[in-house]
Length: 203
Figure 1 (cartoon, rainbow, N blue to C red):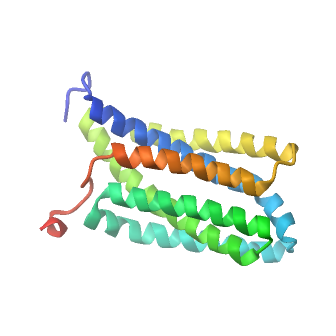
Figure 2 (cartoon, rainbow, N blue to C red):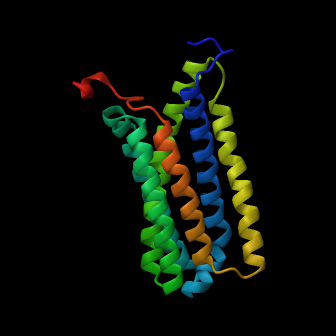
């Protein structure tokens, strides 16, 4: 464990990147939740049918969480975070397109991708956060989770504001996807390779 009074530049970037991306994922999740009624109205489906559409998020999230640990052990957290970021961005864009084109199946598929990305990233981020804690010698995970919570507040406020001015939900989610993509690229570049990877897979 390093002296908590000194943290090198690379470790600071690593820690800041995790904070930024957790903030971005919180914004993306709350943005979707805030615009769910608008998506339902765009699809012109009943409450029951919308429940089936939302099931895509549950399926994706469960799949992502179940496979994330094994993928981190084999490939390391950096790669898993990168894949999760790609799925998050793709999911938001597919949801946006499905809502704009009024295609329920598209929104279902987008939610499955979004949920899978969220599930993958969640496990990998906790592993990365624990590694940063060991490196810097001070708590990191509480702040990491706090960044996600802060992101949900920002996303909810943004969603409510854009709903009030009748901003198109497709463009809203596309803009959030761009922000997540930007944060994801910076995070993947800042996170070191191999965190969480088991030696048995490294041979």
